[in-house]
Image 1: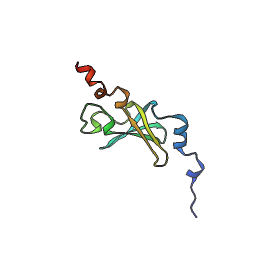
Image 2: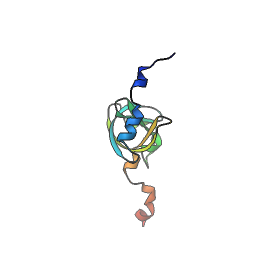
Image 3: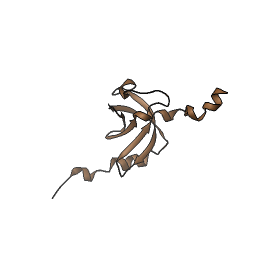
Image 4: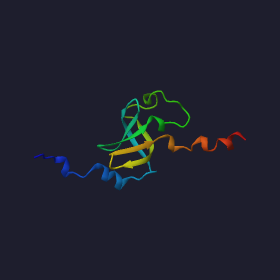
Amino acid sequence: MSLSIKQLEKNPLDVIADQFQVGQKIKGTVSNVTDFGVFVQLIPGVDGLVHVSDLSWTEHIKHPADLSKRAMLVEAVITDINKQKRKISLGIKQLVENPWDVIEQNIR
């Protein structure tokens, strides 16, 4: 038999699905910086990942630590909430318009 107090608490991703939606802008604190991205705390116990490819439209980012540090306050957009995989995807570059979508207008 296996017992867990965790099972008595509401799933944090259910709370996220109730409070947040894809496309919503959020502000959160950087909880961790890795080679592949930046983890941002949405609420205590729930982090979302800004993948390195979602940090900038135009800059080549060698390491996410070049832009973000732990405990830094950041703004991002929720790009996906996957309850089955227990993943929340965030994007910082999505806060601004994609320059590649309007490049023809800008060079004329």
